Image 1 (cartoon, rainbow, N blue to C red):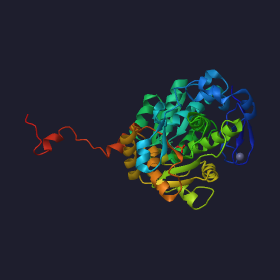
Image 2 (cartoon, rainbow, N blue to C red):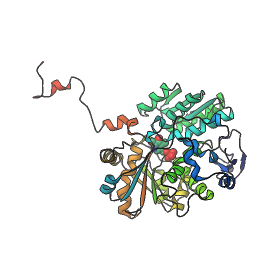
Image 3 (cartoon, helix red, strand yellow):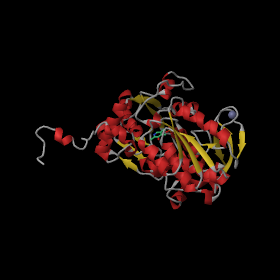
Image 4 (tube, rainbow, N blue to C red):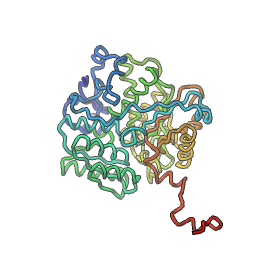
Length: 408
Ligand SMILES: *Cc1c(COP(=O)(O)O)cnc(C)c1O
Ligand SMILES: [Zn+2]
């Protein structure tokens, strides 16, 4: 059973009651769920986790949902942690792993967060959810809303990958394509929330998605037999995964399940949208808006993350860093990972592969430490991007190839 006690503003520390509908604090700060970890420590053991279900609810005592009937699942979480020795040898890292969250329902790690948020909505009696999304969060919301039998209203930039548009339509969501970026979508959701009574499940606008995402940190610990790696490379857009894992590590320490140094958290962004990298380099506590954001890694097209302070705090406290790579480098590295190891990552995850040799060259990573590349999505969701590498002849093109014409 959950050990949730209350929610707390991450900016002003104001307390909010559990079991109620909340978005942001009045001060604008995101809320964080707090648990009675002492009680969890006494009533739960890490040796029992493996008896639980093979989805995020194996960690139910540190998730916010209290009614088992609300714990909907499509099989999210418990994704493969793949050892990648050939890629490691190529890039100069001797203990390299890829955590492949591309195998989640709807092909991205967004399933973890939205499973938890939709379950909470179900428990709290919310019937209409809305989301501004760069694509994968929309697909995940649409799937879990369908599984829960509640309404999903989705706002995405018009140029989202085709896969995201089609999956949302297939899941029966109400989809609006917006001529603008995710911030414009967020404004439209805010209007609908006021007029139509939708509940906004946008990134960090409610406290429960991050709880689902923190299972990434619990799972890494569990899969490594309760020993955390030396470094985690994480493709950072809104940064929820990074903040979530950092929260998980703090909770795991309080539970007494892991000891020792936490992993260096390394935020990887794209050259076309790198507000976190810029703020990190300039030693600032917050991000500035990144103008003209563009990258094929659509999940990283977040010009100003709402959780910027939390992201930058976690990176600095962990002794990590932030780095950007180009779209071309990410796609090249993704094909290298695929061909060497059989893991076809999203461009976001591939960006971390591209960042790795640069980080080793800079001395930010030790070639022999245990390094995890967090792949957040499936390569197959980005066919437009990969098609630029593998153009196919259109039907009939054969006739135009002199010398190769087959007689009719
Ligand atoms: C949303 C998304 C990201 C960014 O996630 P955050 O945790 O919000 O930084 C990275 N990769 C993919 C594939 C995504 O869909
Ligand atoms: Zn506050």
